[in-house]
Image (cartoon, rainbow, N blue to C red; front, side, top):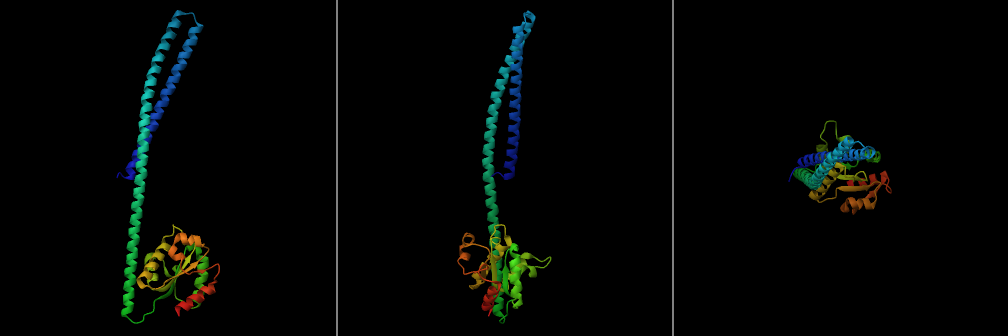
Length: 278
């Protein structure tokens, strides 16, 4: 398939050619109009004079301009044909360009899916490796009790929840605390996912936005962890979101029992987590 850049370059060239042809046709039309004016002026002059020399001169002018008009009409017919062909070329190229763009978009999406699958695989391997090392050792306690997954726009609510959890001595992985200056965000998140018993996921319209990369990354990792361990990890909390929005985003998540900030207070959420941690 011809590349998008080559097709775009071709389309630009055809468009310039079409503009040039249309300008040339306009100049022919103007020349024809000028010749008609000269013929009309010559006819009026003949009607007003009795001079034979003037009549001969004006008659010659009329004959000359008539021949010029005939030639201009032939040129207009030819250039109209060229314009039609060029427009056909443009339409054809536009169709090819649309197909090429769609093909490129599919390639990008396929590559993104492959990258995501690679990330999921690396997370699964890391989680499995960590699980094995814990089994071989003693009853080692994980570093974090809970991982907090949320959209940045929901910080006001999340900060309130985090303070309440910390006041109860609950160990938390929270990006504002755990991702230091200059640290790898992805690596910090992976460590948080690996070493947390549970993950509170604040599901909001901001969280499910298609533009949110990290929330999707974290959720994918949590699903991998649940699959690898066969245990519940995700603790969903609905925040300013409707059932319809959740079902459109994820049927599997919408079917899980969730707490709801419209009903449950921060204290309710903290108490429920404490029960799970005991």
